[in-house]
Image (cartoon, rainbow, N blue to C red):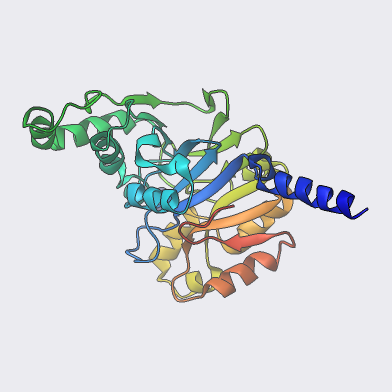
Length: 300
Ligand SMILES: [Zn+2]
Ligand SMILES: [Zn+2]
């Protein structure tokens, strides 16, 4: 009898230690910030990690350093040389300040392939302008004595997309959908279907973007949010702006109540004079499901 129990315990340990015990898909919050210069929150960037591959949504300031921190904590897919594929929600600076970093730093560290980028109209021009801005750097690095790199850093595979399936490989299908973000002509959210999970990321959006229909009981809904209590103390002209461009905690609670995600993750939190606890309370006042307020480097 004792031998059977020991055998079962060994089998259980083997299962627990095997990679199969972990989900294949993880969501890593590289940056949860906004345009505000909060030292604890880097620019918005979310990594969907499937096995040894990573897919970034947005590349705010500090993206490659935050990915390196996640790698150091054990997520190998976020090594700089594996940052090969990224999706932009829109071209606001807080979401794109890390683009030069994402093009250049992994290349210097010998990323074997050119970066692949997907996003709205204007992404190609932004990429070309950044490459032009670093012309002297690229000339010195490629012809000034650094050991030869695998490819020309001026080559970035940019895809300006329309809503629909925009990417597919053997791990993931990525669907872009249009969201309403104030005066932006094009802004996207993304839905990732992987072998074991469905992840939906809102990007920046007002409340009327159909996120509930995109999620439909998805595993993780990552959504931007602002605090109603903080908003109430903002000047009228800023209130007019925020309510057009972003989603309040109560509005998000109502969206989540229809979407019914397994887990709702708040990011890009505009809290102002309020607190994170108050923000969560506002969401929970209309949404009984599981909700967390993300910090940089949280993993779900
Ligand atoms: Zn933003
Ligand atoms: Zn924005």
